[in-house]
Image (cartoon, rainbow, N blue to C red):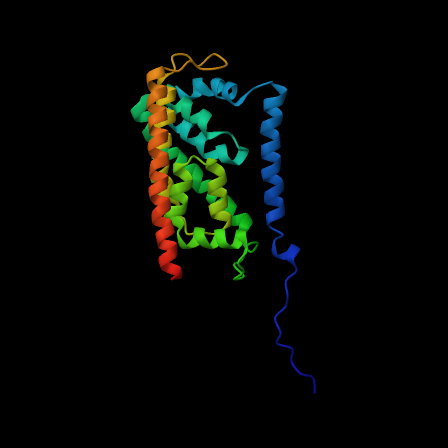
Length: 241
């Protein structure tokens, strides 16, 4: 009499993650296509934005074009700073901040879920005390404070979003911390853009008053990051005591 084998079937790693390879190939092709376009036309990111200004100033459609460009921007690793400057230049300080906050949160959501898709099943907490495991645990346990600090100190915008998704931290603490923590940087860079008189030169000319204001915002942001850092450290100590 044969005994029934009830042991679970072990799914090979490649089979388990098979769906990720076509997606990764498509994503890589998208990035390469964009940078090929940049290289063939000898364009910098600033010059790419200059070419898009006509679309962004197209009346009713301008804000939609701007937000749409911002949403797809993380998929081609286009620098958010340049597009934010353009938003301030085109829409002014008030509408520029409003549109950029909406657009940056939408783009963060895209990057978060892309990171979540590729990170699924790849990074599991095995209870070890390694550096990566400890940092991942810290992000999960103190998601809001950790992401807020990262936004305040101007860490690479998309890298933070991809990392948060990859480590599978909760979405709502992530997006709330992103929305609040990005406000100082958004105000600073939209203010830069609003002070630009012309956007047709290699290096835009900035109003020194706006530059001073932006530096002040940067200092405030760093100070806020220190406050949240202390709160996070206190929270970690309480949780582990």
